[in-house]
Image (cartoon, rainbow, N blue to C red; front, side, top):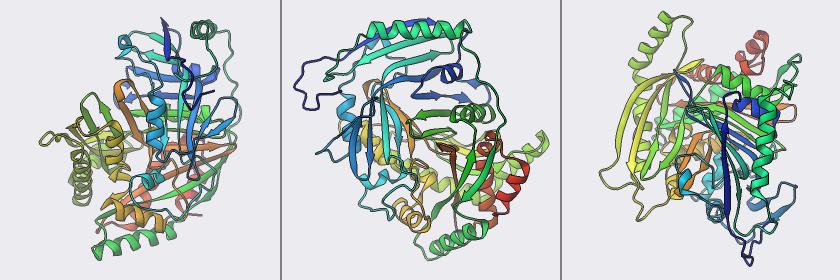
Length: 490
């Protein structure tokens, strides 16, 4: 519990210990300990990244719902944060209560929380009001979990950094050394095989609802093409949602997904009433020291059935004038977003239209970097300048978002927003919430979009959303016949 008026004198502090991890994996921890969040990375060709981040036990959660802000304690008691007007300002306020240790600078510790900003967070950036005021699934608009205890896996050295922290202004005293000792005991039990593996059971997953069938989706594509013809838009990303009824647990679904579709950004976040997980290929925005980075993805092909077909599809993607034009437009938008907060002349395209391959699709990717002007701008400004990504909204961005709000019958929520965490010295890393799922009880919600331009072929845009959701559908155990139903828009 917090003294929100800061009348107490409790100081932030941190306790850490490094232990061996040669017999432990992040997924093993996820399956056998109570975990609030897991953040992982995998390189497309070489497998796992250097670090994995596990938020074991939360200290509190900051969330926005129905235009109000709250602090939620682990015991379920919530406190209204009245008088606060901006979600990022609230995150900054509580991030400033966190401890830090210069000796731990290179470790990606989420001092300032890990969570998501929903797509409709854009209301706090621009003067726009979305017509769907509430999420039909009763989700938070945005939420960040601030951790008590963490595990930072160093895969290069096969070690785990155990971290326990205490925030300034907390009322209840916490013995951090005892917290770390208890975690170390649990890790040893798991390493020694004291906990049994979860039992396999017959998996079931049935598609029960979809926001758009093929005919309806094509109508929306044609509406956007007409708006482009009139000069109101250059590009717009329209999406559709699929609802699945399943007996598969969220942890099992995430485990399957990360095996089938390893990606630069893999995440599992447990908000208790729902779980958000995914394997995203795309950076939303990254701020490290003086650099701000975006990596727009635009241009997609399915993977081939064999190396020869794969190469043919790659060459087709590289020479597709429609895909190239769309990518260049969105790369320009990304360059403009980065340029708003960067030192003049520092913005550079360090990678241009390279092909990155994933389990079911391949993409055109560019990377844009700038030197953030820290005399004028903060990490919050970097988020505001780039959110949401043009690759999930369109161009011009505000008009594209208004068109999305007009055409889509449901609030996007986490989809097309960001998942990320705040590290030391206001470093920030985040991905776009795509190739993701929201798990609520026995329901799972999947969503994917397609970027519509002047010469888009509506049927092909519909097929693009199919390929993007394929990895998620397969991870849930969807049968061939059910996939046929989805493709036919039944």
